[in-house]
Image (cartoon, rainbow over the protein chains, first blue to last red):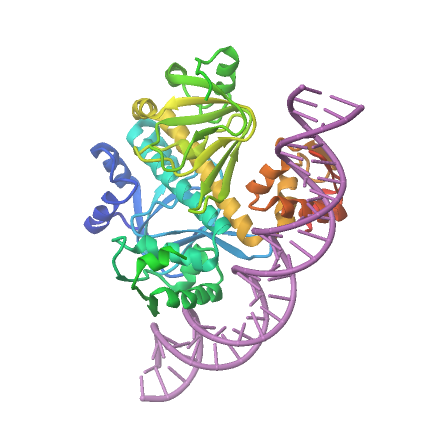
Length: 227
Length: 227
DNA sequence: AGTCTTATTTGATTTCGATCAATGAACGCG
DNA sequence: CGCGTTCATTGATCGAAATCAAATAAGACT
């Protein structure tokens, strides 16, 4: 990570609105701001690695961070993708153990980090912080279960269709949006090889989906729902 | 669930040793015991269903509980299997939302349940309880990521081999043990159809694994590690 | 012990996606 | 603008596992 700095006004704003701090009382916010350090990461820089003793808790301020696990042959399986405002669940190691996964900046990112020992100290005295951690982890566990079920129940086109439908604000209306990250990241998130994602997008062209670069247009969400 | 009862001495003992209460201070333990209700479930009985408003937190005292998600066609994908002492992560819904998955007793089970509103009240005042929840959820998130990665990186025989190796107490020694639940449950846990699990066990016979009913004997853990 | 039900195993077929390879598109840099 | 690099798409092949079916084994009940 590049040289760390204390949070400025802009970072404090983002932190205040993040999933971790947004529900905290004033004193807990102050305590966390006191120990926060902000750093810029270039694309591909590691935040932490699977098996290392866990020392820092991380939160994404801007950019994206992919979290993956390795097999003995060095192959990687993405397990989660974190964006602006997200607490990196894999960095919340409260029992003094080791990181269970590897985190890497998927693009240039701004990250806040907090010394885990000090987080435990604060959370051990301030139930609102401990509850915020528990609440964030509860939501992430639910999403992990959703990913597991998605993999186990659905084909590649179905998974992509479900992802696209989740981006539609209104149930029945055509919509356009821009993928916030590279398609290879989306492939990893959905448990697919990039070629398989590409084929799924091709298949979905026959179901009212148009893709041009990162721009996605969905003409008929109903058609997508029927896949 | 059958008629609920307050915890007796035996149940209190199990709860005290469970993942949730074992790290709590005396007063938090007392508060949780106060609101605990214990119930027997016959096999196949539902604890809660996906989409229902979450009202109870659940912990397994004995038996096994499978947690699964459904697709619109009614197909089920197991996402976790909880045993004695386990807090059912999918029931820890702290934001007043709904259950994200369905829980069902896989065999006759004894379950402790706690009103979620009251849990939030206690945890909002007692950081040790909130921290215990966060810690438990952190571990479960790590396991969910491990399952996701296992599915994405490994074949059926490899997944079974890894499961068996995790049951070996000593790294290099032959070992025997008894599967604690039906093979169809293990299949679901590993993301396999029962036929695929059976084929994997057959394949592993050539790698020092012998199975007779629920009894499993591993002659050479090293051979298993090489799969 | 016999019967019925459920779990497990084995066989065959089909489907899906990983992998490898080649080509094209997009982006960054000079 | 051109070149080099990286990302994305398309084609072909192969392997893994789901699915369907049938047979066998195990467990529960009378």
